[in-house]
Every structure is written in structure tokens, then in C-alpha cells.
Image 1 (cartoon, rainbow, N blue to C red):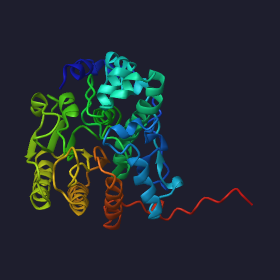
Image 2: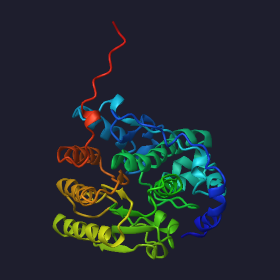
Image 3: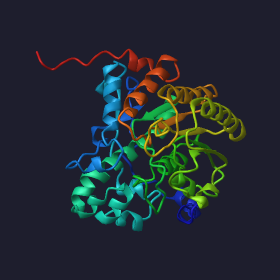
Image 4: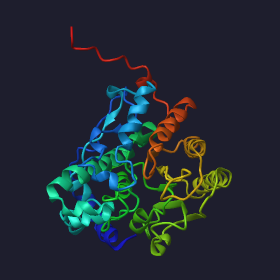
Length: 359
């Protein structure tokens, strides 16, 4: 475990004596709502500067739109994320780290968009960090919904390069670590969590956070030849699968299938956090792998099949994916999971449309 999280966990006996902080993130959800979490606030747009980074800063809204077009979901049958507050973030992050985000220069380094350094910080807070805080709130809520419903999907999140005291790689808040810490603190049935990180990049943020924490088992399948090259963080990976440039569907899917099954058998977790990055797609400028769209859909099916067949709660976050086509692939994958019965929600499927107030 990182020194920062160690310090926080050393007072765990004291933490049990005092009340947990009040949070609006663990909201109650109607049976007629899919455990699919989204907010229009997820999307980033400010003066066109977002186009200076290869990430599609409107990806999340596009995924949601495609699912609506397919008539899987409606606004009234999905869950709206709420923004993580400073108190929520302090469950993992240090006050010192959060204070560094009040400097636009530091946020520019994290987001890898240099002109952000010249913007007033109140604009950076509203246009960049606020969307990240909403997505982080969605990932935290997804932990609760997965435990209640058996599965949950946050159409966003997966900021796996951010740790308790350091951001980077377009990741300003450690949403995966936060979601797991909230589960440990607030959900009695969750005491062991497996992270399956299938983004093309190594998930060095959550790895640094859970370095020596035996309650968390990390399986990470990533391209060894790309960012972040974090040798120290690799020590936290219990099941490390390093890929080479150009790895294709056949090799990749066999590795994912075998290692997911073996990790579940070895660790027997109470919950799974699935970081489902789509930057493994062929042609991705940062991932440098050669997985097809169908390969991504099959990958997600394999993970959900293995986890759901064991009745283990699973929460999925969408993480990286740097091509305009990835939103369509994510939506198609979710629709495929629904068609296969891996993400059921009968009450939401059969929910009557709300009556119009217009007469």
C-alpha cells in the first residue's frame, strides 16, 4: 500500500469509532433504473482546446446517445451521477494533492494539454476538473450498485494513472481507488476486490495505492512498450500480462480468457472492478495494439461471463480509448452484454414511459 494510504489505514480502528462522512454519492436507485451511470456533466469542452489531446472528450455522451438510440435506455431508466465533493475525495487523496489542482499549470501537465496552463483556474475547475469529479462520483456509486444488483457500468471513469498523491495521463482523480475504499468502508459484504485492468496502458495509479494491501488483487494486461513505464508500480501487480506492439485478437483473447479465469479462482473476490479501456483498438495512436472492434466486444463478454457465472458483483468503467470510433464500440459491447443476458434488469426493460405533462 502507498505510504499515504497506509497512514489513512493506520487509524482504521479510530475510523470505525467515528462516523463516516456524509456523502450524496451512495444514492438510492429505483428498481426501474438500469445500474448504468452517466451525467451530461461528464463531457469536456472549452474553446476547442480539448481537441489538442487525442482523447475524444465527448466520448461518454456519444456512448449514452447510442444506447438511447438502440432503445435500451431512457433518461428516466438510467442513473445520474453526482459530483464527488472534497470530503469524498479526501477518503483517498491528500489535501496537498487537491491543492495542486488549484494551479492551472499542474492541471495542464496532468491532462497533457499545455494551453490549459494559461487559463484562469476557475475555468479549469469548471470545464476540466468538474467533469472528472462527476465521473469519479459515478465510479464510486457503481460500487454500491454492483453490490446491490450484481453489476454496474459507469459510462466514464477509469482514471487508472492517478494515485492518492499524484495525477497524470489525463487522470486527475483516483476513482478506482476511491470506489474500492468506499466499498471497504461502507459495504459489509465487500472485503476483497479484484481489479481487472484491460486498458492498453499499465494502471500505475491504483497499483501504487494498493501496493501492499492484500485485500486487493490486481490483474493488469497492458502494452509494455508505452506509457507509463512505472517499474515501481509493477510490484503491486499480482497477475502481470505484458503485451508487445501489434498483439492481435487471437493472442489477446486467449490471454484474457485464461488469466481472468485463473485470477478469479486464485483470489475469489467479493467484487470485481473492470477497467475496460478501448485504446487496445487497432489504429489507436497511443495503445499500439491490433485488437479489432469485435475483439473488444468479445473481451468484454469473456470478463462478464467469468465474473457473472460466479455470482460476483462487477463494476465496469470505460477508461482510455483515443479514436472517434470507440464510443460506438463501447455501446455495441454493452448492447451485446444485454442481448446475452449478462446484464439483466427486467424492471428497467419493462418500465412504462413517464406520462407527458403536456396536455
